Length: 468
Image (cartoon, helix red, strand yellow):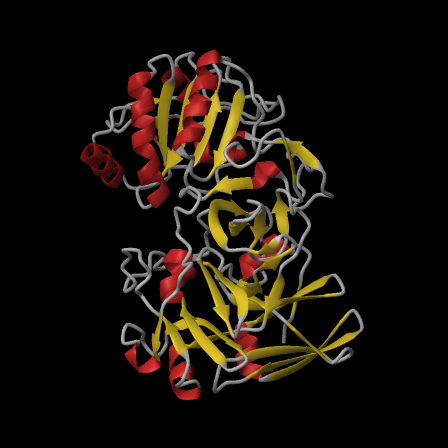
């Protein structure tokens, strides 16, 4: 277990070694203090937050409740380098009574290895880190941790001993005891291919982001809620062509449909921009898929409604649960603008905003996210060869992953490439925005994954990158 030694100031977090005192931080009234002074020898919850963070806004009232109901626990906020006026107004507006500290030089953030918002650290009275959560906590998780703090029982940190090996992105399979986060899903032992400790709650609970299971469609000319430049997934099976706008998928992420007689699930992860269609036939039969509320490497973990297995949306593989190791079959689809549908597919059916849910489909809940290099949730591997949110098409050939930036595809039109001796042809159609990949050796089409660069790297950390 990592140990935090609280002495004259807060000393560095390390494997039992100190690295010098942290500069003093302040309360909102400007009084200089230290984290040690605020903890006052009690078990403590230290929450790193920011006013712009929507998940922080949901969490802070929960911490206020803990502070009021558990005087035996010190609850401390640490603001992430925002102006004093912003922090004061935010704290006063919502009436929070527990202390929050200003950390203008990010000293505390660095010492605790904070790289996402929110981050919460749980300490026992001796200063041991019992648990650290990167990303939002559910109310149930927080209640469990508060009980453990009250009992002062040491527990394993999510970030110290992944069940599949420290630092690994995947593991060789097997089963492990069910962690508290998944206790409503499984009992006893559970099979898995990814470290269970790297699974994060995205905030909403199971089906809190509702999939569309009885989709309705309208004609192209009736889709007045869409602009020509609006992107979406275009799927054609036989004579049946349908368009699923990202404007709707932003709010639902999954559509269970039957197209051309084939049961399909249309999937989109707004955090990663990963968009792909799968055949929803699994070994147990034809299943609907839903949004679990969990993330792995910032990517959507779907679940099938026959076995409650968790599936990676980006890799098509079941990664936790009874069907661990099974794969879904990807289906050919295209990411195009609505204007292309209007010109090229005037007989297509357009997913309707009549979803049975009350959502403002004129608003993008992730507005501006695609321009920011940061992510809401942590990933273990980053790569600066491209901007984190640059769009790429990724493929895997013979176990070798390679990404092709959309900007280069648009410029080049056709690319002939070689992946470990396999000749690949990539064609971008400027008129339709359609991208096709062909394995020339086998004469077969390759189904690519469209998404942000950071997400492709998070799933395939040793990926190659096509460059001019």
